[in-house]
Image 1 (tube, protein in one colour):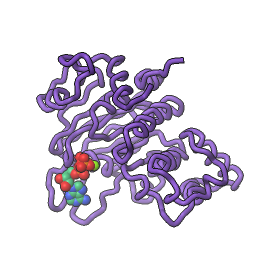
Image 2: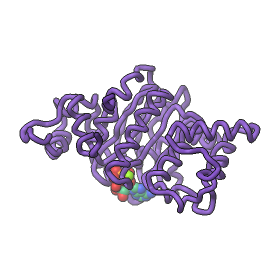
Image 3: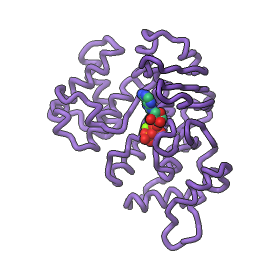
Length: 297
Ligand SMILES: Nc1ncnc2c1ncn2[C@@H]1O[C@H](COP(=O)(O)OP(=O)(O)OP(=O)(O)O)[C@@H](O)[C@H]1O
Ligand SMILES: [Mg+2]
């Protein structure tokens, strides 16, 4: 049986109405205008990619949505409507309930995000108890299901491992399992594959596609890599110097990039082998291109 393409993996979902609508204006004490009028929305079940050069403000967008910017002198204005709530008007106590339960977060360096002193099972249990008080038996069942969703074993041997006994790829899967434990409606992934080798990274991309399809989870996928974003995401938003310059369906970004910066990004992409003058514009060959580049069969 042939491997389904990344694009067909997620085709089942989306179109469920706006889950998140944000307009962000952010000033850091030493960097006023870090985000300027960054306005976008994410539908329920949709995967939106956020791409842009280093320092353009991608991680700042993630931190704003999670309301994790509390340093003195940092000023966030605008609005963040999420699932019928106004996150900018929410108290820190409400945000603590939302983070990890309704919005999951996966970061770039999995080993740095895990507690080195705690076994995998204990960290999963901590993540569960942060939002639910259930019997240990029910908790173990839910943890096993989350591990299964990310193709990890939920054996005692694995749950008793410390983070140092995991490869980076396994550690990233553990973090993803933690992030989906409460089945959040939105998962924010900030460069979740940039610490991984190309094969592991392609596997993690497929995992995100599967989670989106099977759990109907919306994903904000932040990356430097336009090709993987285009293969995974329904829509792509492009940032430059604190502004969102373009947001369009993935295929249109390639076929008809509107903004000069997007045209530059697309022009800089590697060409398909054997077709030096053509860009991988159609969804099918784009997906094949990624799999080829990732060395997948
Ligand atoms: N906590 C902070 N305090 C002050 N300035 C910050 C802070 N975090 C980020 N900045 C600045 O804001 C700008 C946007 O940074 P941000 O980390 O959001 O970019 P990014 O697009 O995620 O970059 P990268 O691709 O390197 O991760 C940069 O100029 C950065 O130096
Ligand atoms: Mg960043």
